[in-house]
Image 1 (cartoon, rainbow, N blue to C red):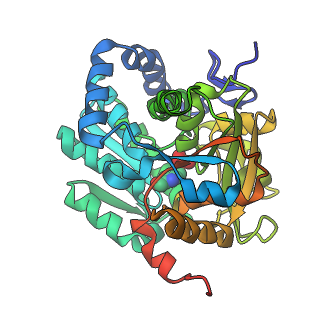
Image 2 (cartoon, rainbow, N blue to C red):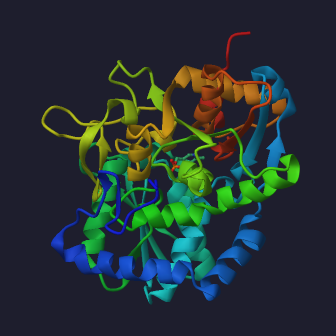
Length: 395
Ligand SMILES: *Cc1c(COP(=O)(O)O)cnc(C)c1O
């Protein structure tokens, strides 16, 4: 049977693999040999699930959004990752990876961050575990995301502003990789999404798969069947989507709808719709779709939402899209904003701008009244209030 899970070589179809400098070969090889053993050990599982329960606040609710359902003529459940500690799904992954780092005897944690959300989630678990934490962040982003920088510092992390390139996420990632090359023996690199060289995409997907594990149980309880007709999520690098679909990847009864950031529109040069606009290339150690110019130079993506502003896409999702297992919609800034205000007024939930892209996809769908839709609200909107206030819709 065709499977959409990773193969032994770290590929999803033609996407994935580990394209890394020689000096990191041993690090990545060690990780590859260790991660499954650790993730599947009873000792890890016990500590991970205890922290997810008592520290993160899991299981996150599966909420039947009645007024939103009426609006779209189907039955919509929201998977409430916005209610997690630190306000999004990212903490599921950072907890898992720091537990792995400890078991591998590493003492120093590095991370890259764009908007600062992954940086804060990493700094949080480093405080919790009393580990040294260094976060690389483009200088442009340091200035744009002041509050997250202050949070990271308050949590005890060192934030390194990166001044190469456009001084954004891709440059921060390059710098983190450079650091890892210099300190391969004591340093663990916590990657924040289903990107990077194998085994990162699979590892992050597994750590986030607690989301779909819970959806199964919760749907069975509420609907008497453990699968929905549609799963919907936004994709930046792809981790909340991967977690939401993990246990349904090979279940063809479930239709997968992914929302990527259209920005000002996919033909405006101001977009982050990597699946629609990208071409096969290599980014951050992975063979995947990349937004690039004719010379193969990576193009700076644009989206109103900092968390979706990534010029690559996880190899899992590149494969789901190219094999048509998932349908991918580009949702523009204005459509995401409209959807965020709509959810706020219909359900009293202010979503993260990233999550608002998944919500924006609802208007492009044709549902039957009996359809059961599970949509992941990846995070809460507190961090985006300023953007919302600057974009209040005309009455
Ligand atoms: C970081 C972030 C995303 C995008 O990352 P994925 O890896 O694609 O999930 C989406 N939503 C929120 C709230 C985020 O913080």
